[in-house]
Image 1 (spheres, each protein chain N blue to C red):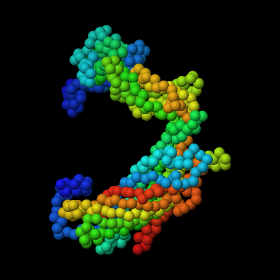
Image 2 (image 1 turned 45 degrees about the vertical axis):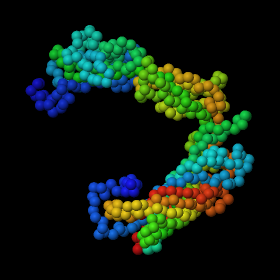
Image 3 (image 1 turned 180 degrees about the vertical axis):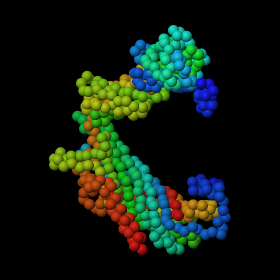
Image 4 (image 1 turned 90 degrees about the vertical axis):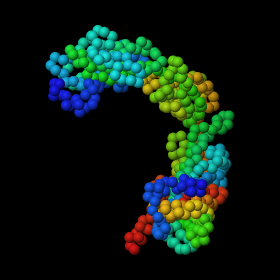
Length: 253
Length: 299
């Protein structure tokens, strides 16, 4: 059963192995270069933490998009910069995609009415440095590896209405602004990875022999950060107010 | 002709079987091999026949054009020998001088093609496919054939599932209606939604699209509209009109504010912008990558 489970998880990479089974007993692990990970999280930007007055609502994000947390999908491609028996320091670049959709608001003589469509899209870029304690599995045989990561974040974002990118003209000053831009910030992550190789070391070695993937891991982590141009008073907060959980799969190659 | 052409005929299966191809392009829609109810009943709508003969005509040969009923979805309904001029199946009353293996003739009445093809009513519930046939005379041999469809089926009245307002437009969700004995078209159907002011003031509008959300544009904000929809088959047959979606708040376009307008209207501090747009924000990352590449080159 365990073999079947692992086979399903690693099917894509393991397909060649079925056709060419070669003994890996006499070969060691392949040289390592870096890592690639795909992760999923749910994000609710803390935009409503700002100060609002004089408008239709003091909680614009919650009013338009509700309190649900849309899915954030991210990838991170890293180069292993420093490898020891204790662990690996990875430095990498990542990008993600997140979108919230909601209804606009119109004011009528009988009150406010919702309708139309409006959205907020965020492409979070990150320059990340993380340290993973490989010693747990490589030396001690424990199939869990803790890790920590810090990242410089740059959220590219835009907001749309019915006719594309939104714009707003202040009725008092006449000043116009377009609903697009980018916001810098930081993020720190603590997590734990389950080393799937432990489920079937033979198959894991075969996969390394065939594809160069040394380890495959499932991970779960929590991230805390701030994305408001490092405290700028003319920026909103795009990071969540909470420790954001994230789960995904990591390939070490 | 026979001896010289025989090797060539064996090399080209279609010709070896004695079957050239004939197509008919309608004058009304410039659609090939397809006509709708209106074309079927019209005395002015016509088609241009184009064909390639499987036999090279000799001096003095002529081509004869005919149409036959064919079972739906099949071809090859042509008679093996030419019909006599003036009979039902002959769609024109004179033969055409054969000057080569290709030929063209226009106009051929679509109504005559329908009649010759066995169409008894242009408002039938189902499509009718007929065989287009070209014979070489005086031998009367079939030298080219194809098919032509009179798409007579109409789509059933669509169902309006929901209407939601936008700024100057309505989004109408439409799904296909249920077919019945007289309304059978289900594939290639497009839908037209029509929005009419409930009170008579304000501009009306319409929109066209596939099943799903269709935008009814060109409307006046603050005016209540009634909404209807109708299906149109691929050949242009219009089906019955849907039930009317009544006027109400959901059919009243309004100048809805977007999230950004709501945020800024509440004095949100984010100013937006990024000189070069979102791509400009990539500059620091690009600079870092360039630095790393430079270091690697130097080392």
